[in-house]
Image 1 (cartoon, rainbow, N blue to C red):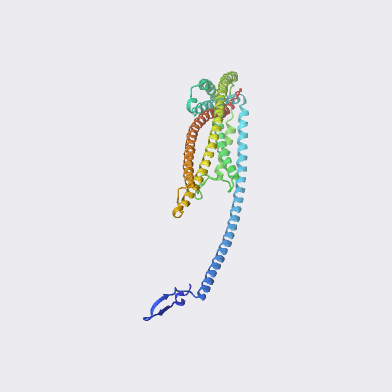
Image 2 (cartoon, rainbow, N blue to C red):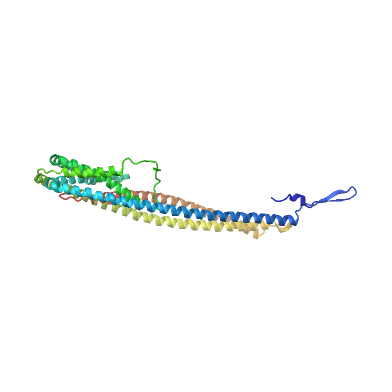
Length: 421
């Protein structure tokens, strides 16, 4: 703390005159010692704070280095255990797949055709039916006048009916085949469940191995440090081995339905492929028509943009010209203001004064004309912008339709490749 500098101030009062009254009062002043002492104190405080800041920075760096080393060590240990766990799961997954293939070989004839029927049903459901419905849903995303009931919509509805008819025939054939291999199916179902769980667990651990702390897409996880696992590692291994043993005992043989299933699958593929080709042709025609209209609109939009740029340049020139006129008006008014200070008879209305008045009126008239043209250009700009927005809306409608039909729908429909399964 600084000492009470008031005690060192130099104050005085000069007395003069008959009654010794005050004639002047000097303001209080600090001494040079006060000035020097104050500077030294503030400099010392600054140095102390700088040293404290340096010490805090060094301590912070040391803590950062320690936490980095600790974090890296724990991450290496966790990743090592993850790799061991994924190797173990991958081994069991391979073993389950091998047992599943063995069961298929034991009942090769009927089980092969059963799988073919299942593949057909899954393809019809997951690909054909899902894609057909998805195309209908996607086409509901068309906007404006493009949301019309065209030939593509009608072809998609016909395709939907064909898919449902083929599904009915395939379901009936599947029931006949499944009755013969009921016991084997139960064992395979257990293996499939175990495989699905292990695949998911493997995917989770592999995903965790790929995660790094510097990734930007990390989600904030919950704190599960106090949650306990429901099963032990021994129970987990025992369940898998029980499924493998049950599958080994459940292998059976059965009669074959090859001729009927062959004929059925062949007919389903032919019907579906023919209807798919007809629908794709309708898509291609519609896409071509939409692109043609969109191209015409884009050409018009380009012409409109050229006019907009021309009007913008003209507005810029008018605004620049108005600014020049405003400067000229300011100059004229300044001259008039200066001449208003002429003395006496010099304050006459001479030719210079008349010329300045006439110049001012002419400049104001010019500004009015320029402002009128600027307003006309602005109105034209608004109309052109309105036309531009209208064109862009139509172009966006056509672009949206092209995206839905060509990118979304046709990309999905590329997966519709029918074979005899």
